[in-house]
Image (cartoon, rainbow, N blue to C red; front, side):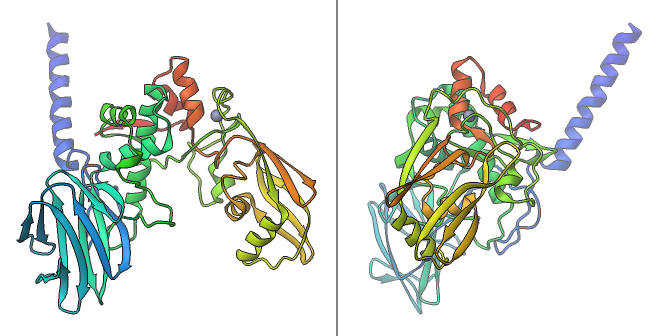
Length: 399
Ligand SMILES: [Zn+2]
């Protein structure tokens, strides 16, 4: 009896402690914001919307709400108009915004579609559009929930034919990645840039697929943390047998202890090896465009320096103007990420007028190997096992 009473007393204390902790910590939601949209240091809240700069410095924009939409003043929230069908041409003047040839007394408006989707230019986005007029130019911000963004990311990153547990792992990795990026944002008025040609993170609804959306729903709110903070969770297509240390790819400032080389036996059945013939003229042209003065190339050593796990770190290009040493990342970005797919097991041979490369895997190699994740799922592993393997030491966190 005495033991039972003691156990109940301890349980009561633990219960009270948990309640006090939740009240103090805001139920796990941290991430204070300044009034001007700038962010103080801290974690971003997973339940807060993400604000993406989608168009920058435009004079006019065509926006369609799919169905009816409400237009409100972006500063006062007062309703300006309600349109049954929302085809809008928005322009900017010194007096403020002009919507369908009518001046509205506001420099910032929010277009809120009843159906939750909005077309900006040619792309259908989830969420709402905010249009800000400044100095006769407009910025268009797409505001949406993180889960809506992750649907698009999962669909774009992996095939609908992936196993459900691999799709779940991808959803969690993508959600965590976006939240991490948001936590470290230094922009004012928006969280992340989503401009064409500048590393888009959200591609609208057209990249979504049903199995991906189901995986997002099944893992809603789950992220990975390391020592209580949102982890940095990059991913890529195929590791070619071994993932890479983060510092080998993105420099010694990157020290995440859970982004270390791990063996991967699970991606061999997928697109594991590649070969690519790149015209010498293409390499000369792209190197020149990147600011390297080159007229001819005599030789390329693709493994001038290698990482501990055997990936190429730097490439030496012997040219008529001397030797150029480039990081493998830089070389890939110059000649094309899709022609030089990875840094693993790189070989390079000269052919008439061209260089012939072979290698293993596809992508930067840091974090989760997507083909490996699918291979693990096929063998019966769940998303937790997959994430533990590729981000060892992180913990699964459910808000
Ligand atoms: Zn792999």
